[in-house]
Length: 207
View 1 (cartoon, rainbow, N blue to C red):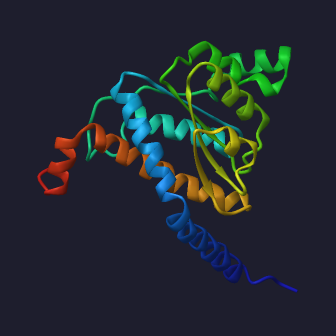
View 2: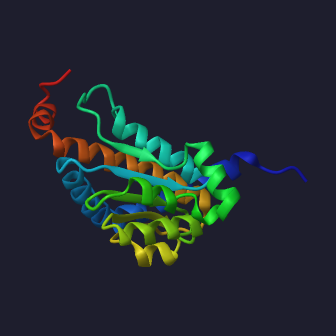
C-alpha cells in the first residue's frame, strides 16, 4: 500500500500551526518577561550565554549569531555580547572525556558567567542533564536562568527564573516554535535597546 505523502506533509504543517496558535495563547507573556530582563542585561553591559543539545545546539548558535550580528540588515545596531556554549570542540570534548558529558556546559558557565549575565538553556524536553547542571551553576553565580523548553517543562522549568514552555511533546514542533520565538525575542530586545531607531522604523522612516 502506497502512502499519501501529500496528506502526511499537510498534517505535519497543520499540527505545527496548531502548536504555534497555542504558543500565542500560552507563551507570549513569558517571552515578554524574558525580553525585558534580557534588554536590561545588555543595557547594563552584561552578556548572554546559550546552551542546548542536537537541534537545540544549532538553535543556541543561531540565536547567538542573531545577537552578535543582526537579525535583519534593515535594523542595523551595535553588536550584542552572546556566546553559544556549544561551539568549542576542544573544551566540549576534553570536559566530556575527563568528567562526563553532563559537565560540558556547567564548566563554561563557571568560566564565563558573572552576576547579572543570562544563561538561556534550550531543550525540547526540559530534561537535558547538561543543561540542568549549567543552570545549577548559573544560580550559584548569580546568573539569570531563562529556559526555552517544551512538554511539561521538566526539571529545567523548575530551575528557571523565566520559563518559555512550548505546549507540545513532539520534538519537531517544539523546535519549529522555538525558532519563531527566539526570532521574536531578538527582534524585540534590539528594538527596546534602540528606541529612537525603533520609532523611526514604526513611522516608516528607515530604509
